[in-house]
Image 1 (cartoon, rainbow, N blue to C red):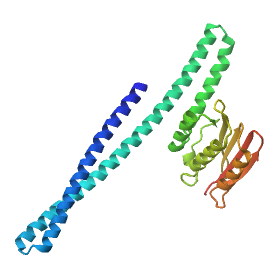
Image 2 (image 1 turned 90 degrees about the vertical axis):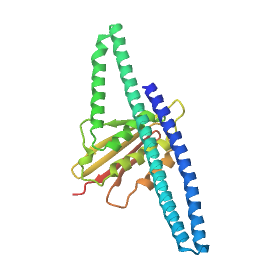
Image 3 (image 1 turned 180 degrees about the vertical axis):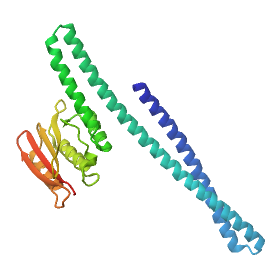
Image 4 (image 1 turned 120 degrees about the vertical axis):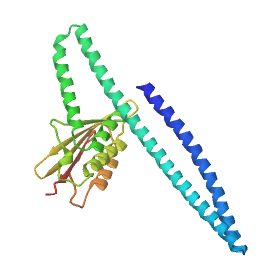
Length: 273
C-alpha cells in the first residue's frame, strides 16, 4: 500500500512538471502572438495601400485567434492539473483510512491469537462480541446516506490525534432521506467537531473523547455531542453559543451543559413537513 502511494506521488509530480513546462511554452507563444497583433495594428495606422492593410488585418485576426485558443488551452490544462491534484489528495486520504482499518484488524487478530495461545478461552467470546459490535457500528456508519459526511467522519477518526471521535449508531439510519435542508447535517457536525477539537486542552500524549449520536424523533433530528476530557471551558462555551445559536427555523441549540471535564451539546433540527 505504501509502495502504491509512492508511485502515485511520483506520477503526479512528473505530470505536474510536464504540465508546468507546457504552460510556460504556451505563455511564451502568447507573448509573441500579441506582439505581432500590436505590430499589425500599428502598421495599419501608418500604411496606406489597402492590400497591405488587408494583409495586416489577416495577420491580426490569425494571431488573435491563435492567442485566444492558446489561452483557452492553458486554462483547460490548469483546470485539469487541479483536478489531478484533488484526485491524488482523495486517493491519499482513502489509503490512510484503509491503513487505519487494516491496523485495527491486525490488532484484533493478534489479541485473539494471544488468547488462543495462552488458552484463555473464556476471553474469546466477549472479545468476539466486541468485534461484532464494532463491525455493526462501522456498517451503520457506512449507511448514513450522506457520502460526504461519512467520508468526513472516517477521515477525522484516522487523522485526528488530539480528539477521539466515537459515533454511536445502535441501528441503521439514512440521514439523506430525512426532510431537512440539504447539507445542514454535515455542516453542523463539521462545525461542532472542529470547534471542540480547537478548544480541547490535551497534551501531546493525551486525547479527549467526543461521542456523537443521531437521535431521529417524530418531529426532528437531535445531534447529541458529549465531550470528555480537559478543555477551555469559557472559550468553548462562548464559541458554541455564538456560532450554533440560531434565530432561524433550520436548527436550534436544544441543550448545553458545561462541567470541569465534560461538555454536552445538543442540537435540534426540525423536519420540514
